[in-house]
Image (cartoon, rainbow, N blue to C red; front, top):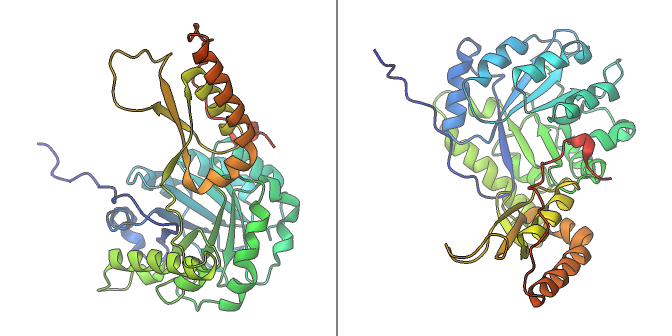
Length: 352
């Protein structure tokens, strides 16, 4: 007899800048699969997994086997926050379990660089988290390996603690400096005490991902509304504190960076992707079944949030390729060289 269970649905496309990661620490730990499916259906952008070993922090949660089981229950990204003393012993298990990003603590007494390199070699985002009392300068030796900086605004270990506004003001905006090497995809996460009451403040400090835990799991509260409120208030904080009253660029918006023949569009696409900015090419203009792909124009699209960084690095190159395209057309469009579609590079293959 076929199962009646409906497949979990993904939320509609998220607008705006801020993203909400639903922490399941305060969910029903006896039914985490339901909690994850509920967070997904209510509009969370990610699932935040608080992994605690009872040693680094005075609490004990779950390990990679639980993460692997949850991976089968959702298509949302899984952000693992390892509050454990020896992440090097277990990092491969968490990667194999399907984590999309892994953040460890800078305060551990183990070599940190090899762990970050293992995470990035697996094609996942690597992050470092700091306790409230740890200065940002502790990140300095590892900054070139970071995709994520997580600012803790409570002492790690338990949910439901009071938000430390002074820590947020001192660290969140400043944390972005440690991600300046990345042209796309760098994220500052804020974890601890995030709710509708604190979202505007951290959004106004340019936080990218707001980890929301206990505020989502209050009995009788509309989780979807809470997620929408947190996201909207964070974007409003960014708009008026940092962006001169202009709404932030939605993270999912794409813009056309260049329009070129396919062989030149692919060339520029590969160069841009090696810098860490995702790029896509599509046939330009209305559908014309008679036009040959080798002779028609192709639009090269980038995330709007990375357009400025791409222009700083590639504007001159783009102008040169536009001139080359004009010369090729003026010469009667001779058979162009074959340029294969580029393969997106792994983190270790990115150009400095």
